[in-house]
Length: 349
Image (cartoon, rainbow, N blue to C red):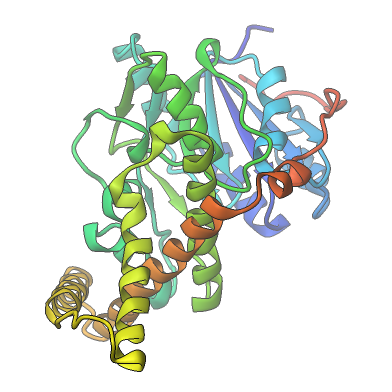
């Protein structure tokens, strides 16, 4: 059997319903190059049963409850495709995703990394739609907003990509860090950047990524993202950027304002920074509302933007100051290559 062109690597980390929807979208691919499906089963549910029902020949590796990077590394080790396509299990792919990836990779043989945006799925709730629009805005997500909304095609860097929709040529793929709870793809991309690997952003390489259902879940997600970024900046200073520290600076400013109000002995800060921030938040919320043609979205967006900054900024601080001893203790234990669960391969794959 010839080797597949694309190895699709998925960590089963949410639930059976979302994983099944992801696999169904892969079954619906049109004119796709030959591909294989590899799934890491972390034991949260019976992923093997879900996968075998849709892709009898897929490999399901029992990785156990490990951190995401540690779960993905065994998939990389058994992958046979020229391209490794990393998808989250709460992602669904449009029917032309693999065809587009194959065409783009053939057109740019010098490029090592490919990626594109992750859009809000159709039939999402109003809250989820506004959430996606906020993340796609510069005010909401800064330099990483390209991950959530289509921008122009071209050569890019790690700010443009996210692991829920990322392709890397297998010959250049380094191992994922096994001690990061988040942002493990950014560590990989930073390593590839230092080696001079070209990266390309293609807006047509789009997937649909499930948004968080509640404000609490969204806040936890943003805090986790910030914590992962902070931990990465602590271990690799080359990944430090002012934009990633800006939300933490906003928190520090707010704390200082409160201190001035309470103590009354510190120099007056003036209303200008707070006023400018509020104006930018309101202007972005208005733009989100107009772009979605939903007047009620204004209030939701105006509340979510500061929530993103608060949660992400506090997460960055936690990631920066967390004890490296705790980080090493939380690292997943080294695992031997798990035995794959297999049963026949998808026809034509």
